[in-house]
Structure formats: structure tokens, C-alpha cells
Length: 219
Image (cartoon, rainbow, N blue to C red):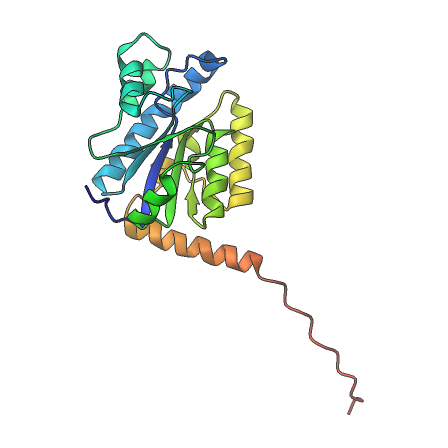
């Protein structure tokens, strides 16, 4: 069961959920609006042998596991059932349970990415203005190159979602290319990651000092 080896991974945050919480009814239509694109992106990743990682909240059920959560979402008449049915993981996908907003905080995700050899992350899921945003911040702090396909992230409030995406691009240098235009091949991601890193280094470089004025007398 050794992990795959890949420079890029696709992460789906909190897409398996019963949505039985306050404002879950408001989130559902926005989540369903991105579900089909997420399913297509995940299928493309699997075909390209890019690891697909589900990072999911345990929703306070400390004695449960992901399998129990998935079964609840698939079999019971909960709000999130249509979402779970579209986005259920496949046998070779990875699963990480989280207890707080970030996919990294007190989870095994960082260790998994290290074993996989990942340096670029395609981050998707729910909700853009909370868990995806916090996860993007932690990914950036770990020097991971970020892609956040704007059409694969949803929040309760579309305006908050847009602002969160803008902040991820501004603060974490996230590439917001839509999933339909994102080339999920390892070589393409690697080339774009190098180009993005070069742009970031250039932006951080101190401005060149003006040439020192000569005090020698004119000829």
C-alpha cells in the first residue's frame, strides 16, 4: 500500500457531507452547481495518474470514520446525499479526516503529500471562504504551488466565494484557471509551477537601486 509518486495532487475539501447544519440548505445549490465539474476533474486526475485526496470534516463524530460518514451521506435521506452520490471516492483515492477548518491542521495530509513527492496542489471543494481558504493559506506556508479552479469551489454566499478566490490569488499566488482549461498532466503542471515560482521570486525581489551619481567633474 505504498503511496503513489507524483509532483501534483488533487484535493477535494468537505465534499462528502450530510449538510445537516445551519445554512446547509443555502449551501446545497451552490455545491451541486460545481459537483459535476468536480467529478469530471477528479476523473481526469485519475486517468492522468494524479492522486485524488478527499479531506473531510468529521463533523464532531469522533468515534466515526470516513466510511461511516460516506455511508450516512449515501444511504440516509440527508441534504447532502445528491452531492455525495456524484462525488463518492474511488477505491484508489486517498482519504484524510480533519477536525478544524484547514485540511492541514492536525491531520496526516502534510505527511501524505511528502511521501507522494507533491510540490503542486490543485485545491477544490467547500467552502471557498472558510475551509478552502484556510487550507490554501496552510499550503502556501508549506511552499506548495497552488491551483484553485474557480469553477470547482463553492460557498454559501457567492460574493464571499468570489472575494475568497481573489484573496487566494493575491495572497497565496493561487492560479484560478477554470477546471475546463486546467491541463492535468504531470509535465504541464510542473512547467506552470516553475513559471509561477519564477514570477513569485521576481515579485519578491528588491527593486534595483538607482545608479550612483558620479561626482567627477565633467570632461
